Length: 122
Image (cartoon, rainbow, N blue to C red; front, side, top):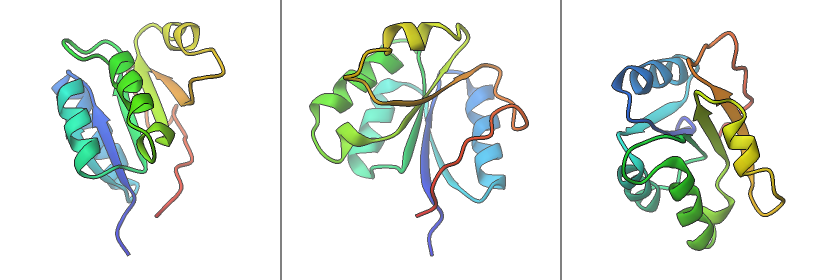
């Protein structure tokens, strides 16, 4: 049985490495992307069970990735997303409407003890 595949997209190498390590130690398969363009490319190639997106990436940011996913149709428009943001209210203010399906919003820095998220195993 393959581990659940999760994509982590953040422009901070430190944060990408940290989140990947936390997920891998928890038994997940974690792929990383340095920006929104790489995230979309990887999602198209292999749709993950969950995407973890930094909101404030240069170029294609997390908001733009979410907008792109909404326009891609199934299964991409139903992909569970966890948003990372230093401004913890930013994601909720922007995606508080019923047309967005943000699964969770986690503040930075990410802490394995502070962020206990239940991600279904494949």
